[in-house]
Image (cartoon, rainbow, N blue to C red; front, side, top):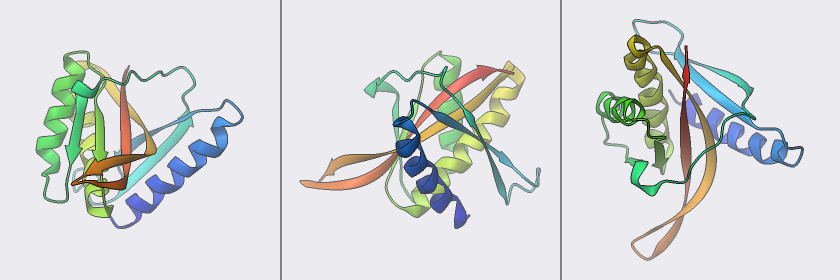
Length: 144
């Protein structure tokens, strides 16, 4: 789990460099050793066809104390309601929980013939009169 936050930050940085060339990428997380769900695989592909809407109503906050199964259920619920959810998190543990949640939500949505991909990006959030760096995941659904 410790490598997932580093990988996500690297992908967010790469997205910044690739955007200068009008290239966008998306990430599809999966469990390498299902059903144990201990190791993750990230499949990175071009995602120029995917557009995000900045709907603050669909923004989920993930903290290090969040339970990934509950967050996954919230993601699946929003996707089933045809919303494009976002997850904002601060810190490595919260980022790991966010990635696990997206991977678990993919399993929940399989029965609906839907798959999920995400785009990570760096953002700044105001917390208690202080600006902090965070990662924001834009989550997109696609038909299987």
